[in-house]
Image (cartoon, rainbow, N blue to C red):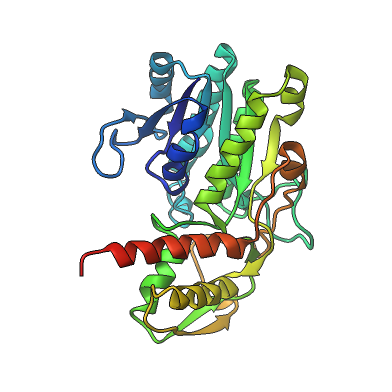
Length: 313
């Protein structure tokens, strides 16, 4: 099976390169046509949706996995058209091609499609209500993919981090070396979810889906929530990062972490206060266990610790 992977240089895309390999021939794409380290690959620019058809015709994948997106949440408020092109129009273009060719599209979405006002974990069919331009663009991408008629899996995730890339984990570890005291928001709730968990769970779900008959495949299509189990706040996540990183020798000292409300840390775009997602449909459909968020953190910190130990002194 030929698998076209968009966004292969991102946090999730990097992990998908490894996780999807047992399923077939993975054709990696990035916006600049190069993987981390400089290896050449296919070029796919979601900011230019009209160019995607030629790439799809040339590579002719049976499976399209879209791990690329416009993810600058605050900047999206000032670049709404760019966010909509990449997160909305481009996804529609992928879906239209897949519908014509009978290909499957796997697309990642976000907790930002919700308004964060719920009192229980969000289910897939709960009403949406994005608070900002980024969330609106991601919701538009979901709608475009559904309306395309393509077979698809929309996997909503949240609070993504990993040992590579720009994310909360790496930011906290950097700040631990610069400051003795930090203030972190403590009234936004979610489940920190590692990029490796997202990639491995996606690949495991696809492996099972491909092994099923047509009726069971059809029943599994649609929207699923894919996040780690449990929940915490950004402040709780930061404290857990420092505790595990100190134990692994990744940081020399643990800074003091003071809890603050969102109102004390204003941002250009509003964030959902409640980003906890109900994963029952994903777990029941594919028969997969989603571990506690602390397990993913331990794995990522361990990876960073190993890298630190192997680095030249």
